[in-house]
Length: 106
Image (cartoon, rainbow, N blue to C red; front, side, top):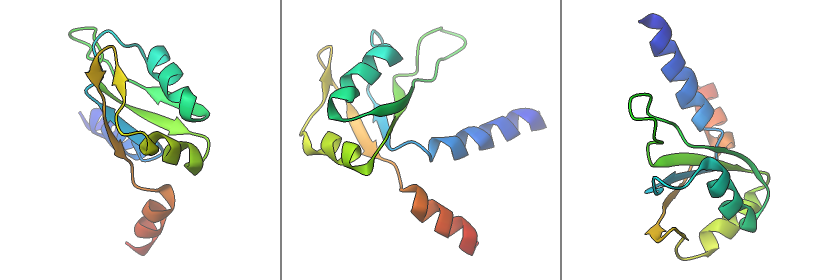
């Protein structure tokens, strides 16, 4: 049980390294397709769509990591992002610098 808790903590920390949280991803969209879509805004370093072990489908949300802050700005300059007819919900993740300063002060 303790090992599972430790894995969850590591996962939460690693997600802070991503720039954008993406929700409402259609079931039919793969991580490769999501990465290809966001590549039009800049260089995508990583795209993660977590899967549900019970169903075998992704959980309809994920994270995108870009090479530069400008790439992230490019994404948010577009009003809406639509994949396979569904509007994606995007949220900018807190900056890593802010998190590092916050963790150092605690």
